[in-house]
Image (cartoon, rainbow, N blue to C red; front, side, top):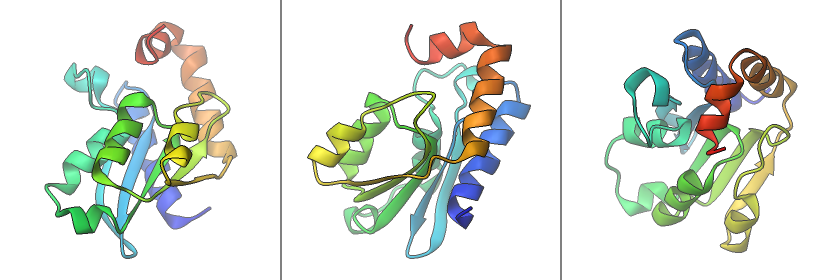
Length: 145
């Protein structure tokens, strides 16, 4: 597994172990992780702290030129909110661990010129499946069902 996707998966596991939703993300600039995060909606009672949003928040304020030279790695296909943020900041590439559990706005990203790669990683998939079996109501809340 790619080292950056592995780092995102480690973040997802942190979220799971803390009783939250196991989605992790890292923001990579020129081969260096500048932000990491995981979904903290449960832990912090947040409506916006998805894994991608947490990674961006933890990267701190960056000039537009940095975002335009980044790759965002996420363990699960990004939702409309996270996809909008990717577009807003001009992040040109997203690597997704898996999209079998949830298909986010990949086509929107592609239509706006973002390179989207899906790793179809079994570890990412199995972690989400385990979580959904254990906490289906929390999963449904997270995806707005």
